[in-house]
Length: 138
Image: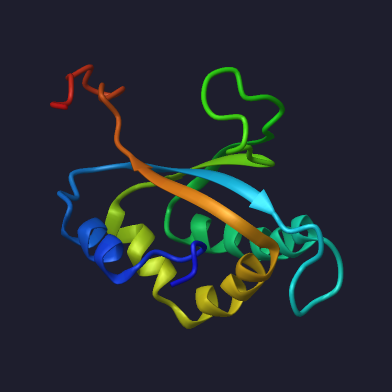
């Protein structure tokens, strides 16, 4: 299985997780020098994916919180370097799953697969609810 898409077990675990509120997807991205199957660099292919998916994220009530270049590893294995980082907020895990299971998302995802050499995506939940100030169990 590609390191660019979740395996069935990972996807099932996400779907079975408690869906009690917002989730932020932390994306660590490593681009291919040249995109597979299309013109341009891996970063350019990923940008085509991003252009299409931002609209889908927003249609689910989500938003891109932050994107940036990964400049330097301060702690950790320097061989595991990343080119970019993105934080994407969704109102729920269900909203994320609903988005990634559409035909439109699958069509856009081709650019992601052609542009990335590796990635890590981590589903993150808040430890403190900003609205209530309530601490979440961890």
